[in-house]
Length: 312
Ligand SMILES: *[C@@H]1O[C@H](CO)[C@@H](O)[C@H](O)[C@H]1NC(C)=O
Ligand SMILES: *[C@@H]1O[C@H](CO)[C@@H](O)[C@H](O)[C@H]1NC(C)=O
Image (cartoon, rainbow, N blue to C red; front, top):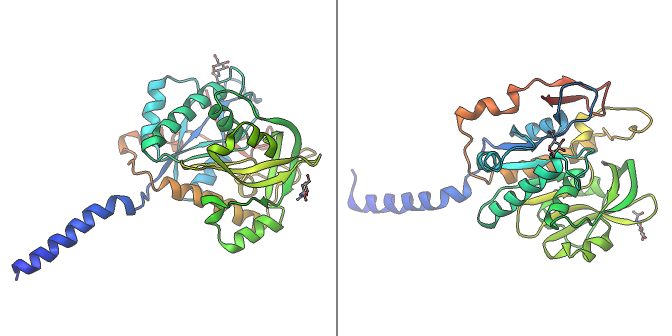
């Protein structure tokens, strides 16, 4: 029978459940936005693209993907940032400091994500050029980058003093692989040197978690995270080992060892777990905007990406 005592206990249990639940239950249907880039490739009539490896990287960790287009209105960005549980700024080869779609829209999107993180939780991942774009936008268009020679180099990491949330959450076997095996592939002609990391006061908002040396011995930052916001940046490509197989004179060293795959998957799992903390529920009526609605093209023979989403 429902005695008064039993009811009081139930009421206590119930109030406990309703107050604790929203903070502790993961959003297990995360949607991550991936920002498109200006397309300068060989297929005519296409203006923007997303390399499919970024999509697969997010999908392999349990997320769906919403393409975020460039050169759109502020209203569009406000709307899509309210739909997604996190955003990825991919790497690529576009001027982020000039009047390009990725540069202009990327800076605007970063400002809006930063704003949303003042009183919310919208995780952001930046890879390679995506990392450079975030830093450049963060510094209100001061460019802290230095020319460096880091093409087609697979390296292990030199850890910094602080491991942060990102590397601090890595199991010992992942740290072991990260620090002793060439599991991270670099393709960049710009570096954020340790010197400039401090000179541009980036250390007030960001922690430098790991470093590498470029071919001329310059120490640069390879992994960064924001101190107070869920923003994570790598100068190398954690999505390539699993999903990119280009093998030519300039692209020969993408690691495909089981260690490299485990590390790439670790980074994806970490980031998508961060996205699960964002509670926005993607509305079913917007499903038609997800990446599934777009065809993927076989671009392995004409670019460095096996597959690409090419948009008109
Ligand atoms: C985006 O806009 C910029 C500035 O007008 C322009 O230079 C660029 O080509 C545009 N990109 C695309 C893909 O439309
Ligand atoms: C990077 O260069 C510094 C000197 O600039 C040196 O002390 C360090 O051992 C180098 N690290 C690696 C991994 O080569």
